[in-house]
Image 1 (cartoon, helix red, strand yellow):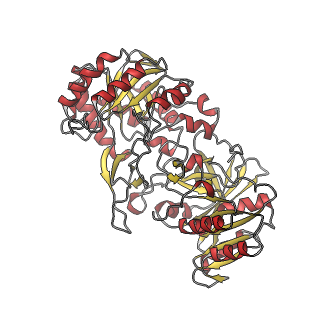
Image 2 (cartoon, chains in turn orange, blue):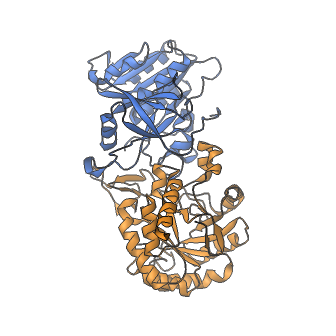
Image 3 (cartoon, one colour):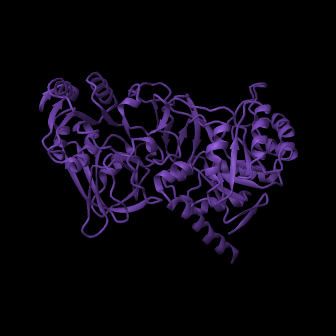
Length: 291
Length: 271
């Protein structure tokens, strides 16, 4: 099942969605067995921002039928400590590391991309464009012009694969995808979470500390299939498909829709080794479909 | 907190349910963890039923549920027999309470880090509330059956769980068993009269833990609190279970669930 993605050799097509696995914490919990049975063919880091972030006030989670809403708020150490403390440790993983970054302006993102361009430990860079540009007020990944302007600025800064993580909360995701391709994106990943909300049944107030959050899990799988399919019709560059993958069959469906790689996210919360099982199931299905 | 945690096997595993016992309002579920290590007192597991996990009230549950281990014994046939204390309060606990021997339990763990031994020559005092008495039972198994315990419950059916812990003094909110009032009344009295040289180990609802924290601070008694927080994963991936400490948010699943009271400004009460 080995695949080449943007020039990176991968043992199989299953990776993790950003922010759904922390190998440094998991190594404390599971010890050396984690590296021996590492479930992903590449590791995508949690979002790194220029400055440290505490994240959103709790509660941060709400369970749904077939999924959950999270409003975590991108807590992270900030670029400097990520580069100094975490990236060298992530580089010890038996798989390539893709670093996910987010900035609140094009200049911030340019600074993040430049800093990572200098680091051999980063095999690729994924841009989280699901937040507003504080200078224009537009969500960078929701507007083709805004995203094109961002990539025009940051694409020349690195020769590493630049993956754009698309938000599903956009009017026309295929148009945004096409703008990303035209401005030099190496690949696209989708879908990020869908905006959602829940009320506390006792108080009648919004449950989540940040009022709204992102919906993930099998509840969004059909949306992911439709969006990956629409984007695959519009672009030539590789696609990382994700959204509610629980079984090999779900991964195969995303590949049928046009994904080159498939990411597992929420299912890893239910079982950290889920991607190992899904990869084995996918392997069997692909072998069967090849006959 | 310094003791090395017991490391969990990577991935969730199937453990057959061996017994289901009703203790008043609570259920004790026992299972055979054939591959698992012996957990530390205060560590927890993520549990889910192997079948029909989903399709309950509101089409839930979806995520596994976190439970402190109540007891753990070496199984002569191999592996470890684990026991969990469960109160049916929602779709997840409801499904777990339905399980009977030979049903499958999916578990991940042991997770988090547990209780530390008392500092210096201090003696342990256990303080529990409701279903939160669970980690105190295994801690008393380790420390010795003569370790004193103060347990609080809402009413008599819940107070039946007190028999899981040796020699406990009981308080109930409705006064039907033991002292009428919060268990922290008993703690206050204990610390005021001959309470020097104690280290308090507490687990229970947030309001109780906050009262324990304040009483222990007032009497300069060290305290280790086992907290609870809604979590999706239990191993540091989701960042959903954070609690506020003097050093900012920490993930309760990997940096707790047992926290030294001195690291907290307050135990958040609310959700």
